[in-house]
Image (cartoon, rainbow, N blue to C red; front, side, top):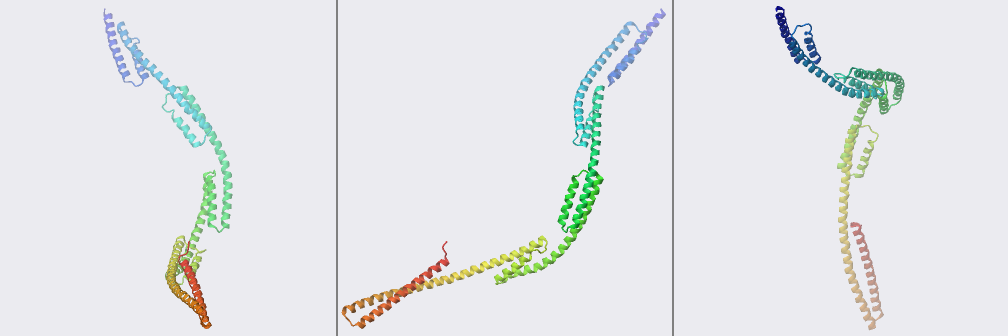
Length: 407
């Protein structure tokens, strides 16, 4: 009897204790963020069944609760596994495309640094990506092979570059020395600068190691500095000579401008301005100095031309006034001569009438001869006046044509 009571008490106590463990395990499962960790809590709780005295009904009740929890969490683990595999498959195909591209880039790189950066970029895509272990290993192996391929090509390129750099360095060093000798042999600063710029451009395009390029650039730069010093000295000499020439030429131009404004000796002044103009040829002047003086000389020419135009215009005006007076005189002379001619013709008719009367009357021969002499004289006078009028009219027409020439 006592043994039965003790068994029931122990079984009930075990039930209460085990139920508490299972409830605590369920609480931990609810709080757990990792399904496998949560399943571990259930396994720990299940292990407490071993060797524990329980009534059959209590055992089945608690065990059933625990198995139901196992079923739920196993389903979640299975769903998680399927989700992982699906996502891993998608990630695999996406990463495989990028790895394939990386392998292609590494096999034929257009730019080593860009290709290397691309491989690093592809490598970084693996971080945090869900993948099956075998897929990850396979993709990583192919990507590493791409890195090795690129390294080998880079090393081969480096070797080729070193050989090419040595050849370019030797060639350019000789070319630069030749250019320096040409510069020493010429007085043309412009040609010297062009030679340096040309060899500098050639150096810029050549493949060289940094120290080789720096060395050759240094030689070119040193000669640029020497050339700049020569430019400065030449410029200073030019400026000094230009200032002297400017002052001398300025005096001549000022004199020419004054003469153009004041003189009436137009021809002599024009010749003087032309001589000043000739002084500009070959003389060393700054562009602004030449422009200033040449502008003032052109002003002198313009003023002289304007004054000449005014002079000839006034001269022509005076001549036209004289010609108008002349035309008036000719017109008056023609008019007077025509009046005199009419008188002569009237006188001739009277004389001819008288002659007819005398001849008809049978007068003495002396009277007839006298009338005939007077008639002949009058006819000669009429002829002279007709010619005089014709001559005056011709002169008048010529004068009018000079005043108003036909187009």
